[in-house]
Length: 236
View (cartoon, one colour):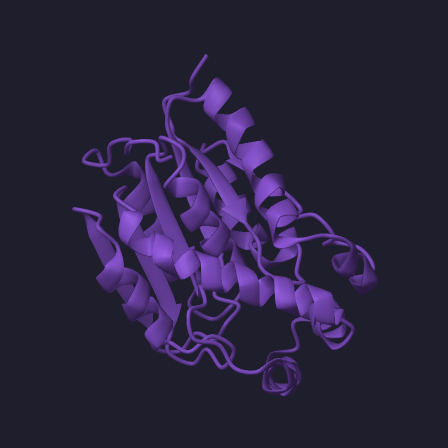
C-alpha cells in the first residue's frame, strides 16, 4: 500500500557512500518520508573494488532500489548528490517519478589531482571525520573508475533536455570540486515546466553536511511536498 508521503531515493556520489547524504536522509525520515539510500556498486569498501565495476553497474544499483520504491509507493522523488545527480538524470527520464533533485551535481569538474588537494584542504578547515574516509578513497581510486565516471558524465549531458519532471537544482558557491556553473547548465537545459535553482553562498561540495545543510533540508522538503508536483512520463 502506498503511503501518503512520497518516497525518496537518495543517491550518493563518486567514491563515496551513503554517509555523504545521511544527514538529509535522516531528516526526511524524521519527517515521515520513506527513504531508500543504496550503496552504489563497488562503493563503501576498499577503493580498488571500484575498478571491478562500470558506470552501468552504478546506475543499476540505484535503479534496483528505485524499482522497489515504485512497487510500494505511488510517488517517488529522486535526490542525487554529486555523481548521484547524473544517475538521477538517467533514471528520471526512464521512470514515472514525481521529481528530481540534483545537489552539487557535476557538469564542469576539476581534474582529479586538484580535487584531491581541495578535499584535503577542506578537511583541515572543517574536520569532517567521516569525510576523511572519502579523501582516502579518492587518493586510491583506480584509473578505470575515473574513466567510468567521465563516461557517465559524457553520456548524461545529452539526456538533460529530456528531463520533464519537476526539477530542483541546489549548488554551493564555495564548491571547489564541481564548478558552480554546472548548476546553471542543468537548470537551463532541462525541459521541466517547473524547475528551481538555488545557490548557497557558504556551502562547499558536501552540501548535505555543510554549514547550510538545514537550508538544503528545507529546500528539498518544500520541493517534494509541493502539491503541484505530478509524476512525469516514463522515457524510453
